[in-house]
Image (cartoon, rainbow, N blue to C red; front, side, top):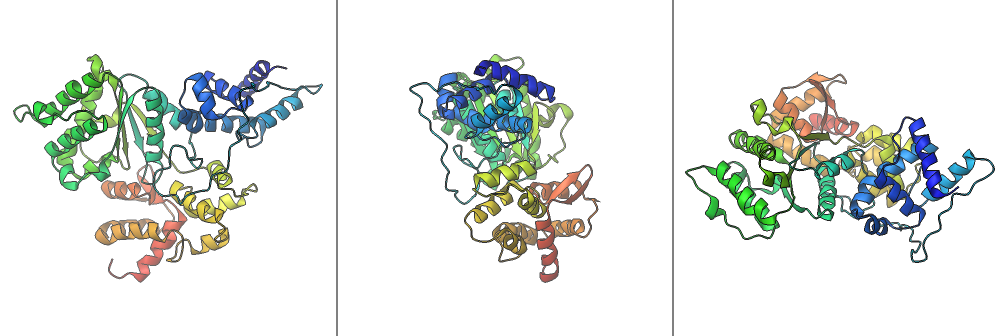
Length: 455
């Protein structure tokens, strides 16, 4: 049996198990694995970015094939296990062979020494866990003219890591890219519409390495929104003459300033709508990432939150935790350890990474880590202290959260309070009610209730 025949058989099996067959990119990637190519080598041959193949295509493909054959596939063992799978299906024993080319060296992946997990995960890091189909959906969407993508997730759930990979994919397509995190903007700028729009234009201009000409376009007689729009169209989009992917991270920062948000959000919506009638606006591909629902009243036809592709990042699944533990060099094949960790942190990506990092260093056992997790001596102390500092500044927010902690049943909270707690990752929203997001927060903040009289 040659490899093409085997791929056809594999597609039949996928369809029989109510799964989709290999698409063209996955077939090219699998053929590269068969030839012992690195993802970078395959990317050069087929015209895709290495980051896209590594972080988007490969994880989803290997996950789907693992479910089909009932074994965990990695890039290293993929060919061996699939050949065994083919041999088990046919009689007499058949060899599925495709010899690597003479110029292609076998280059097995090497184990990386993990760095302490803090902030976004680097593009080339093996510790990024894809959560299909979100990565592929967003990468595909930004290749369409005049698109708008919305990514919602609480803080530390992986929004920025996802954005980095999407922007890397866009760059490999020859697009221009700009990333702006509104948390890095001064509050005084976020609180003033004119300053905010000028800052937006200036930041985009600098990242595109163009000459700033704000004063040539800014005209107080026509207003800052029209001035900003003309600047984007004439000075940026028409000058670069290429698709521009603009990622606005933590857009919820302007929700705290409703008088600004009620103008900025409709402006973003208007740029999306302009693409339907003005060709140059089709080059603008907007990605807006936010931690909370917008609580600024907007008319339906002015909101950017009811158009475009909507995606939501959620916590890691059991399989994700198992995969990540393996990448950290931990032998958690029985699944019991992953269950115990998830019982404490609920699949929270940042908390999961932190635990696996410490366990991979052999500093303590899982039992020791979990026993001290909600205490001042635990690995999450600084993370928990950051939340506690917020509560000390906003006692009413803590009292609302205490209402959630005091019962195991879902409770109702005032909407803005629920949005704030959700953006911190402290609660899960179940329709109009909420529950605490994980046992770590329940244990830690119940303890603080009794030991801190100032709140």
